[in-house]
Every structure is written in structure tokens, then in C-alpha cells.
Image 1: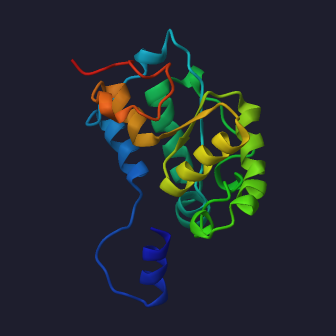
Image 2: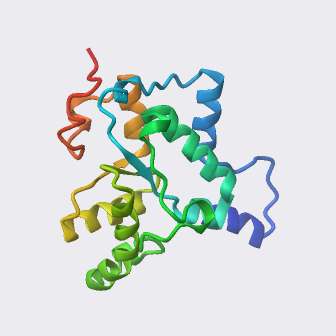
Length: 187
């Protein structure tokens, strides 16, 4: 998204559309009742979640407004009381260490060392799950937990949206922890 928006600006490409993040639409659709999510599944379980603010999405593209939309969506799916924000957050959040091609660059020791900042930030929240709306962040944050045996799980935002709606299939739960493996299974 960042590259697409930058290309439009750099090359002064005329266009008659607005570039937005899917997060903006998730928030809009939830507010309009078009995306009917529900956090009731987590009222008794009280599983704690935190969220990663992706560099490309928040800091380099849409800023704090998309970070606010992200938090609205997350709280709508897991419950206000089950969301723990990282500190710092939003535009000031730390990079996970996996973006900009670093994840694929072939330097895992350096990536793990740099990612320790993010690892410690996640651990400080005490959350069981780190929600990631970016696939690079997801891979890096998941790898950090595995590498350092941190014990938290990493989950895509859409996975939780689908779980909260009761439409997440059994075969789509492989990377969830045992606490979510059978929650809200479709009938």
C-alpha cells in the first residue's frame, strides 16, 4: 500500500480514487452494522490481546487515524476489557524488525536481535495473543515467540474477525492456541 501510494505521488499519476486500508473499511462496516462482529465469545474466557501497529500501514501511510480504527475493530472482536495496548503505540510503536524485506534477507540472528525490542514490548503487556494486520509483522512476531520461547500466539486480524462472527472453520485454526481451538465453531 505504501509503495502504491508513493508511486502515485512520485510519478504524479492522475487517478480518480482514494487509497484506503481495509482496516478503515472494517471499522466503517462494523459501525454501519454490515460486518456483524461480537466479543461475547470472550466475556467469560477473558483471553488478553495486544495489537501490532505495522510501520507501513501506520507510520508511513495513514498515521494515527488508521491506528484508532485498528483498535476499534480489535476491541469490537475481543472486548474492551480484554485489550492491552503496547507502550509506546500507534505512530510511536516500535518496528517488529521484519518489514522492508528484512524478513526475507537471510539474516535471522540480526532480525531476532533487533526484534527483541518488539518481543519485550509484547511480553510486557502480558497478552496471550499479538494481533497483526500485516503478514510481515505476523511472520516476524510469530518467529520471535518461537525463537525466544515466549509463549504468546500470533493471530491475523481477519482470523479474529471471522472467529467473532462464528465463521472461522476448523481447518483455519491451526496456528491458534488451544484456548481458541474450539471457540465459536460454525455449526
